Length: 122
Image 1 (cartoon, rainbow, N blue to C red):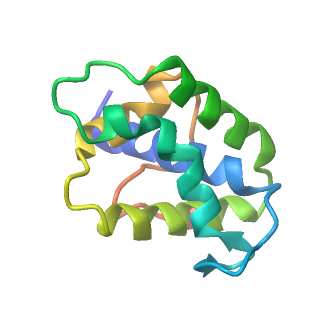
Image 2: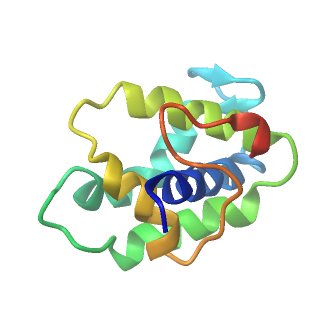
């Protein structure tokens, strides 16, 4: 699977998670609270920032599955935009790990998780 495909999957997962979340007083992308989106990825930090980690933890995958189950419709685009913003603000993020998250957790996505993701496809 190409890096772009893996990145797309990760972006979609994040978008799916935010669909049912209510907006807060934080950084927003449409109806999506980007801080809440980021919270779903907190259990994944050990994988996303550690080159020596070969797989995300079960807790990471469970959190992302929860986000995916809650995200439907146009909120997914907002989640995708949040992910792009968040990824740009974390210089230590290992892009290869971010793009492989959805595949390694068994979560299918419509768009790549990357700084260049086309969030209209989310």
